[in-house]
Amino acid sequence: MARALQGIRVIDLSHVLAGPTATMILADLGAEVIHIEPPQGDDAREFGPYAGGVDKNHSAYFVSLNRNKKSMVLNLKHERGKEILRELIKISDVIVENFRPTTMQELGFGWEKIREINPAIIYASISGFGHDAPPEYASRPAYDIVAQAYSGLMSITGPEDGAPCRVGSSVGDIFAGHQAVIGILAALLHRARTGRGQFYDGSMVDGLFSVLENAVVQYTVAHRIPRPLGSAHPSVAPFQSYRTKDGWIVIALGNDRLWARFCSLIGRGDLIKHPRFKTNMLRAKNRKLLTQILESETVKRTTRSWAKMLERESIAYSPINNIKQICADPYIRYRKMLVEVDQPQMGKVKVAGSPLRLSETPGEVYAPAPLLGEHTKQILRDLLKYSDAEIAELAQAGVING
Image (cartoon, rainbow, N blue to C red):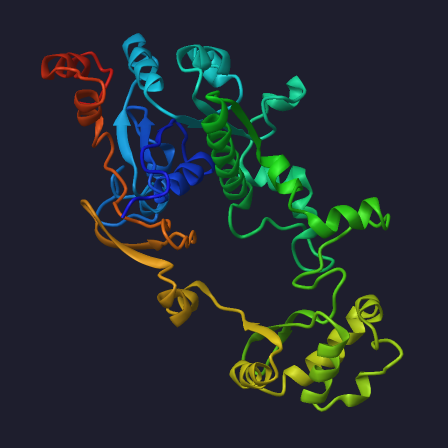
């Protein structure tokens, strides 16, 4: 079956998470992704957990982000390494990196130089604050936690009246990767119409700020500075987690009709027209009192018992699954969101699958993550037409892996 991005070649100069997330999605959709790594490998190869041994080819973290890709070791501090990269740029469609904005310029591969080599290429860069930013911002080092803090996300995350919390997943990197894919696909469509490539300037802080939906308008319209509310929603109630007899459950009621149905279900019809709770606006305003009242009811039954009752009434709910529970869940199995890959030197490894369920060209995991430099010689020989003698010379000079 043809894949959606079959025939698109991507040079992946990125490392760890933001850029590799973007190129993983492109690879899942069928693009040929050449992950160019320095001789010591992508930093992600140093991150655990490990399977089958503790070295650069046994990082499950790296495996989870680099399936379907090829690995080429290239020493870009060496002029011959730079020349090979120029040759690859000439025959590629997309280049992705997530260095600080000055790094590629210093290597001699800023946007102006790259489009001289290939005017049709799409160059996607992901950084903390973007290239087009005041100098004191553009040059800042930034990790996911920096983006979460600076964007305002951490200020609204965590227990009510508690310390600000980082979101449990590295959403600053991951959102930036997903948004880069949107930019790359739009640029490919534009190129198909015009023949021209373009530069994508991705910022982790921009990406997170753009998804603060309710928080931004809480301030700009209602003139309130949002604060952490635990699992609660600032504008809708009940819309949070509640204790049960043996754990926790999320209950979400989006309108007054559902509120009335829920009150009848739990035997508290007196709450339907209660002067503090009869509308969503009033329930949100009096959320603390409402939580105390509802939790005094929810703790009387087990999570499973509540699930059955809420299911019958078509009320939105969920148990709060831990990772073991969700990995074993029949829904995840049915949707093929946990897939097994036969990873060289590691054996069978389960990783998250692709959520891109297109009817004709779905995203899928069709190849394991590459060993460090596994495809270096193949790429030089097949794409760039280097001879075996030339390849051996490059290895001897330390430009590629031996």
